[in-house]
Length: 300
Image (tube, rainbow, N blue to C red; front, side, top):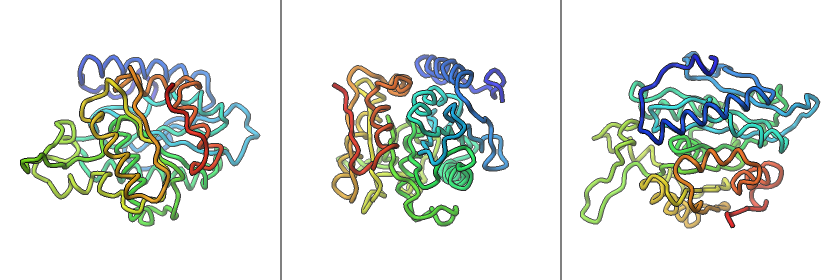
């Protein structure tokens, strides 16, 4: 769909709506200046689509691949929000994929996760014809997309059911994500962010626990970079360092992360359009090197 013809979505709040407009404008510019194929179907539903951005040099093959998943509280958002990252990533050089998924409340957990897994399976099976290497796939996502990226990485037990080989994800870079949909306070009461109730309705405690990436970190073998911002959504700001600590304590792979000073929940994504952004520099290093040992560029 052309950017101006995307299905309308209700407002979220003034800051999120400003971000959405900015992301669409920057992504539209990226589409105009970067070689791409849009609206490729990985399933029958309208939202089961992805965009592939590629370097200008059509002779390049065997390139690393980055799959990025949009946010929006699981109920809003478009893959078109994520195109703004494409120019900096295709310049690495690498192939860049922006993936959409069915949205809540019509589609609650596990539908969005299953869509991301199906989209990843499509990328693995088809990305070679766009110059990408199916054995060099890295995933990431913003906000709700960060949650889904982390969960699809950690739920390796689901991969075979979607035709994915072991170790298909070489690294995961979620930013400003949610990692625990079901936690308890000191008095034993359940803590649920209002936004997570869109993905897992209130009262479905088993699904909320199952949908929490932090509950799947035991034995993780995939390198992670977990980032959040100083002025982030309070729920994301609180969960980022806790998730990072859990990966370090219970996992068996590299786990890096930091807080971006001054940034908020939305600028942490928008600033990734700059090749000099520390997250973008780290992604480029992990795409072109071994994520287990490649450099990590934290904010100065």
